[in-house]
Image (cartoon, rainbow, N blue to C red; front, side):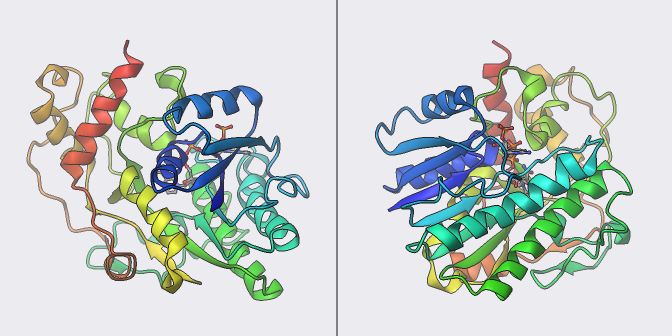
Length: 331
Ligand code: NDP
């Protein structure tokens, strides 16, 4: 079977491609440029012949995926901007997130009669209600939706990013409801994703947003432990595996899944780094060592455990492997 994976150059896509290749699938990855195509093929060189690339220069353009979707059996849609410093929210976030998603679905509907399932990497962004803050005692489930509207979406770049993911996921469910295509969809809802940054990156300034979130804790740029932005994480390798299971399991049809290991804080992260990497202690802020997680919202992960059979790595394993993966950036 061949799956199309959009945004093949990305951090999560790199692990997702690896999981599909390892399990014997052929993968066609979409990228924006020839240079990116070469890097993606190099990253997965140990699976010669199983991976090809196709260039889709602008995912928000009409009919962008018409060629890419032909002859494939499934799609994993990951291409979407994860940036928290956008200036032109419409152009940099809403258009690629929403039109990128509907364009994948439209092309599949028109040109891919064999597709049975499209897995969309949505986000906890489309679940949480940012106005509720840390919401002690509350447990988010797949029934929750970020209540953001087009009127409230442009308050600041972070709200706009969260909104772009919410609108994109809603557009996907609306598409299925309105067009009744041959395929069904499954959406995955990870919070902050950490773990080895195995994608090609030129230098540390080009790291993806969630990896950069950890990198700044070891490069000396943070003198104090920053305020935690989101209080839950997932390991990128677990999330990659969840994509394969969401693609394969019949019961995942039409479902959303929170994919998360546990709650965490940046204090927990620096505690692990300072304990496991003594050589980084000078550059890693100390904060209040050992402080437990404060009372904050939780995420109910029982649906992914029950229906996708997920087991999740611990924060310690994830952070140690994340930091080790940064070694290549310092050479
Ligand atoms: P990356 O930035 O590493 O990857 C993003 C991918 O999307 C890249 O392949 C990038 O291509 C592509 N992309 C971004 N903007 C555009 C655009 N305007 N047009 C075409 N392609 C674009 O991030 P992640 O791997 O972290 O993110 C992958 C997905 O996972 C996204 O949908 C994100 O919202 C979601 N997600 C990520 C989380 C995290 O903590 N990392 C948490 C929850 C959800 P290029 O290389 O050419 O820029």
